Image (tube, rainbow, N blue to C red; front, side, top):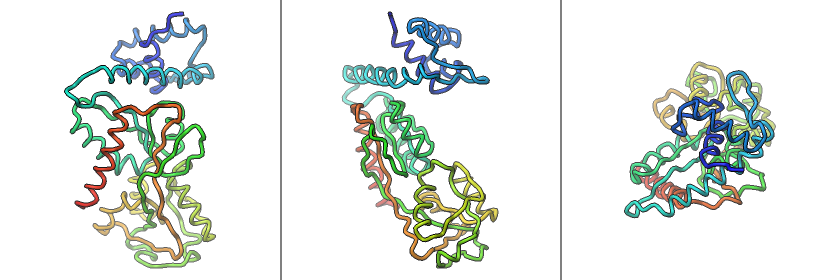
Length: 301
């Protein structure tokens, strides 16, 4: 059996994208060559790795078995290349990171750009999704590290406290509760605009609200902070987001805050890594850079 690194790279790219054409762009091959490499890998393993559903390729049980092994092997090869590549002492390589929505949009996007501007031979790919998907990406070796807003109980992963954050309840400036301090009973029966199931923001808010017997029910669910803010600006109800997402809207008086007595919405962000995966020098440098970057940003704002 002769499995090549190119075949495994093609397999991983197809698994990520679900399409041969997109995978071909990622591995710098033509679509026919990509299809041929994938077919050859399946021949070598004597197993089908994908099922075609519509116009997408989806991993089957055999493919799901191979993916973490292939990803880990490709990662180790990348580590070898980095260790024996000299670039005047500067960092080089590509880092794959997953982050939940608030962290990805309002923290890591800025940090990744600044990091790559300082280390010009690096690339940082930030996949922005919800907490549960980030956990799966790290658990399946698709990302070297993840940054989440919710809880992680996966015993395959190492979890460490990262930054702190605060959620805010907000509404349209013309809403009857705008700018007021109210009791939990006063918001019962209100329409809520929340993140989707699996979101760390939603999970944290609902748990805190239920401790006060608020029992909030989502009338509208959206996967992005911008969509939630837009809906609230149109009068859809009360929303809950990180203060990171609301800063400018509040200062421009496009949205108003609602303070609910006894509702504590200060929360912890976490960084997660796989216990079986050794951190790269690039990953370690990025984490250290972020700590310094956010401290400087906080001092200058």
